[in-house]
Amino acid sequence: MRSAVIALVVFVAVSRSDFLLPFQLSDDLINYTAQLEQPINNETVCPLAQLNYCQYSFNMNFGLNSSITYSNGSDIFSTIQNYMNMNTTELNKVCKARTNFYHCLGHSYFTCMNLHTRLQSNNTDSSNGFDYVRTFRSLEWICGGGLRDANNQFTSFGSFSNSTIYQGCMTTFNQTATTNNFCSSVQATGNCLSSANSNSTGQAAAGRFGCESFRYTFNKACPGLQC
Image 1: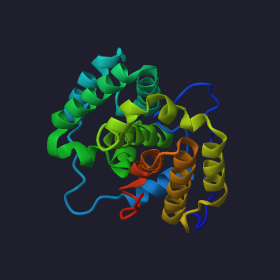
Image 2 (image 1 turned 180 degrees about the horizontal axis):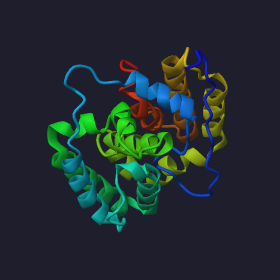
Image 3 (image 1 turned 30 degrees about the vertical axis):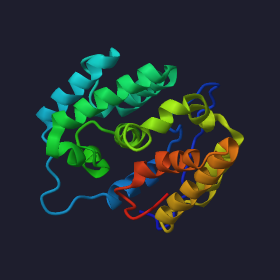
């Protein structure tokens, strides 16, 4: 792998709110992130039969076809995005389903949500694997520490990803992130999103929400980063 690969971040140009931050990474950086997440010792076992059952149960809440699995991460990402963007009722429905999914997997949850493990699975390409993992990692924050603020500031938080200041932060990430400085670039982008969201709303909580929504995607690859 090259020592320096520029991140390809593609903005989703839509005129709607997006609670799951709309960005993509190049395959090179997805694979590099997976390398950083490579499990050690006995942290590699994800029981696929259990994961498939839990995913099926999760999917039933949102009308997803029973054939949709962890290998279809982009479909799951877009479906959950659409539900969360509707209103606070649907946002909380997603969070309840996420809690049940977490309890269904039990101690296997974090192993199954490991990007390296997912990309080692058959028929899982880089983009689908990344979208799958980042969907559930984003929900860890939004449905956990960020849930009260997400409900109270639904419109302003959801519309942040359509703002020019959000795009400015992500453009900088796009232009500067490489395999040589990846985690520091994630931290810098989180800081940028924090300042941008806080300044646009006048609320400190909004800044943390913007930063954590991004950081949680990479908290296994880049442990120790803070918002």
